[in-house]
Length: 223
Image (cartoon, rainbow, N blue to C red; front, side):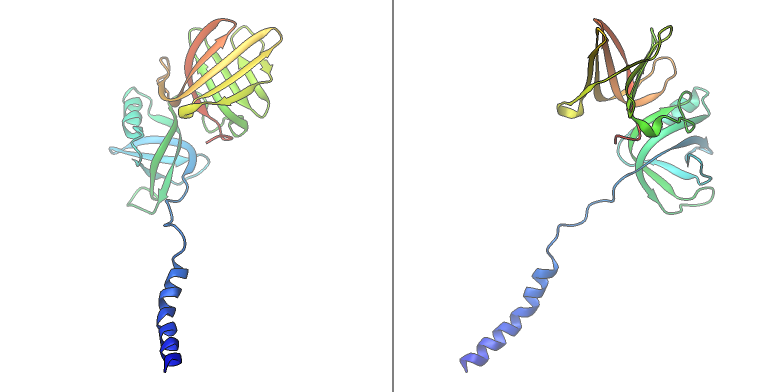
């Protein structure tokens, strides 16, 4: 009798054991964000996004408090009808006539009416690009190292060190050919005072004791 009871108890426990074995992992999180570059247009009160070299158009919506809708409408109202955007987010299904779905933006890297766009051949090889005005300067970090461009100067290519700091800040430094260069970057909304372009990083270049401020954004080699 005791053997029979033991056997029945074991059989009764099988569903519970099976259930425990089935539920072993954590709930799945949201899918990874898709990063896309393309054109943004304001049409009939809606923002539409067309990825580079594509005919598809997506309804652009703000899914992460990025300010993309406000920024795009502001630039469009300034007379810059077609904008270039570098964004990350989730693509969704078709929403209605005139579009192929929706692009829910979770990260705004760059939004501009002029400057580097879909024809930017260096973008895929870039880690970061920073620039400023008065005086103009541009610094690119990528597969070719660190390159500083300034008017009336030859492009200056230098080896560099990168340091990752708390709160998402970065420091790029180089000391070669008798020159000391440091670029400090912070995750902060930045607006170019001349073009109105909006980026997700602020930048400060220190070159031989001179401090130059500007904006920056990640290239394709860094998310």
